[in-house]
Image (cartoon, rainbow, N blue to C red; front, side, top):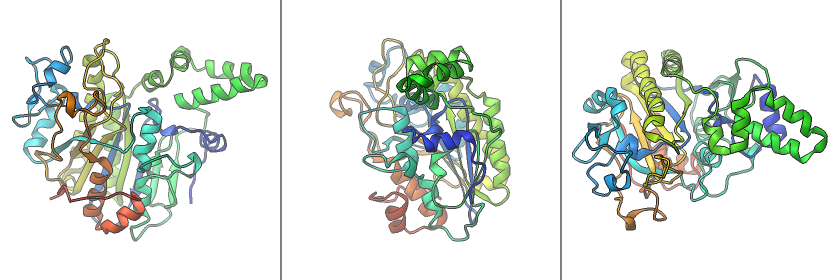
Length: 404
């Protein structure tokens, strides 16, 4: 039985908004689920399209420095992971996890979403886990929720969502309880944009509607004018301390019966001055992972963390010393349960002929396959059930051997 249906959720359903309300950078929802067994799974959604080539720098590819003349400083390449890849300098505190086998990367992966490069659609594809067209907005469910339907011992509080916006990845037919801190109409940026379009279509409500939205302040008004990318960056981003608090809360819950958690971190949309704009987001990600490790204690050895983003970014930096929406990106895995200290899935190369559409990193494997194998190995699910129910139509392929 679901609880906590607030006005925001009612509006999102009754208006059939096309974009996922979970895409808001102003809030950080958390979704928690209880499940049998000892393994823990944490899925972190990196909203805004992380540049995988800055997170994980392929310095061994001779084309890399040419494509990033200002974004990559050869005098500060980052922490060497092997003879080909270095880790961004801001993530130096994660290097010990690599050495202990508790950190790994799939450097060239993506969802099946292609070419349109919309944050909202890309994030919905990531959380719904489908190929092809997205289902109708009101019938979308998330792949973590579909996974729960395959697991025994599920009751009315199996899924416990915390946050001002929903986590689509854990919504669906499996029982779910939702709690939201506050019941005021605190709309996400994309909700505001869509409501603005609705107001404009009806002169009776246009003036009153715009007045109500403008009462929230100038930053949001500017974002409404500038569109999707501005909304991804609008509003106060959470600090590393806030990320610590979220991760600490999740770790505390996982000390009990909770086995599955999902939350989001924003700030990855780096069209301008990426060198400095990316640093706060990297700090939050690093802080969240290390706090999970500390808070889980011995349970870290039974934990798998997967940090994924809606799509990657262009290989070439743009005129604003940033990068634009791309295709292939990097998947980060952490935890004591993984076979870390390695790169997974190969490398496509950065020569012109190797790029996707002549501009993006070519994905070598569907990110859903990595997720599918993780849940199969963590929770003992049958691969045929995962392919039929969790990711319909997916061919999982050979096991990447993610876990110990």
